[in-house]
Length: 378
Image (tube, rainbow, N blue to C red; front, top):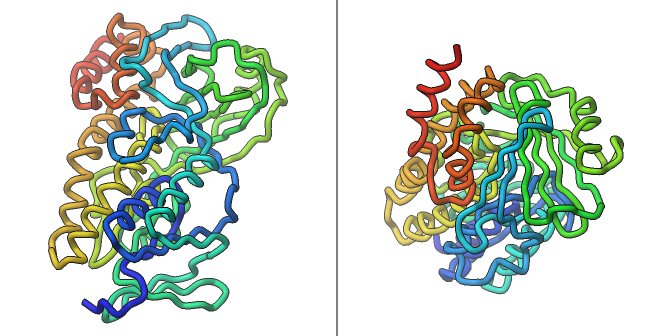
């Protein structure tokens, strides 16, 4: 291929997936351009929870980007009937702020040799004989041998370029950050009874909480104000605390190709978010890491390397998410039964904790859980 093009890889989007891909490719000696349409440091709606096991994918310490270490998870039904599970490991679950994590990864990528540009909005991506051309909205045109589509849940490019599902499935979310004293800084909370077909989360961070409401079946958004009017006072907060930020989270919905000739999709743009517990940071970092490895081999002439990326993401993430989707479909349709037969069982909280920490996948528990929910709910 034409090595004369100015960049080996252009990455559209400097979130966790794009930043991870940029770092690993630059570390491998590739000429990398990392493009982000938003200004540097902009905050983004995200619960910010991720398994500490993601550290194994990076040669540098991630803890400077970590706001809080979570050691236990508490589940409730309508703010009552609590179940608490200790998370396995020394520091199994981290809370981060997206603005901090994204900037940290981009800095690591730049230190490894990547070029990064903020406020650079890509208007079009087109295939050219030697690679790809990216047209910026200001009129500038850039060329690269390969492209990483990492522009998040609202991706404008993944489906038109044949990456991921043609019709993505979305969960409706409302998120907010609240500055406050935190009573239990090492405890993440999941509340299942207040939201129809979904749940609330409350993650402690330095100086406050990351709080969210998500609806995972259908397209109708939860009555978030009514939900928050109950949830926030239960945390000792005013019912109107925090700025509401509405979003649409692109969740996993089946196995789909994540590659084409010289191009891959990663992170939320690839519809990798967990359809049951809404975990998105771990698959973003995983996909960015795997995509970088595959692109490095593809640039060296290994023609099926990008197909291996799609296959790798299927085995390492998608197969578990297929089971997670089935659990979600049963659980969220009859959530009260799901809470009693799923979460309240003696071993269930620990299993969920192991999934959150990355020690276990949904496939390890799914068949037993689904049978229990389908056949014992009467």
